[in-house]
Length: 116
Image (cartoon, rainbow, N blue to C red; front, side, top):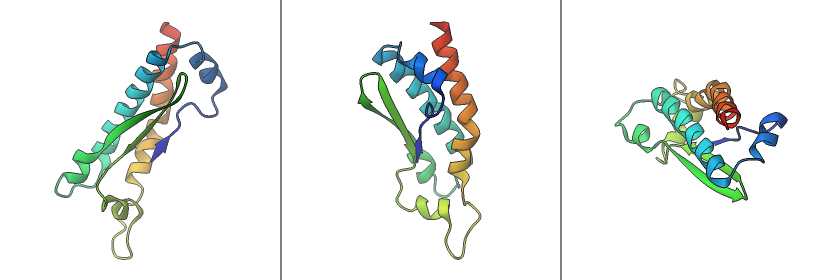
């Protein structure tokens, strides 16, 4: 799953241009941790493998430009997230975690930038 936390927010994008590469990575890492925590709280509990495999993966895309992907690395979790013909009880749990933490992620980015 991909969370592009600054897409569409011109004010935040403009502020990010003034930050160093290290500062942008720090913000993206913090955002990844916020979403990771929420995903782990919501993920379907099985053997614990899917829960333990949820991790943020920050990636540098260019100068002061970072992206973060947060997802479980177990192959089978996809079927829990989108459901199967027999089991629909876990559908959308991780997507909901991304959507529900979006404002908190924006707030973290703004707070970091305005403290500067």
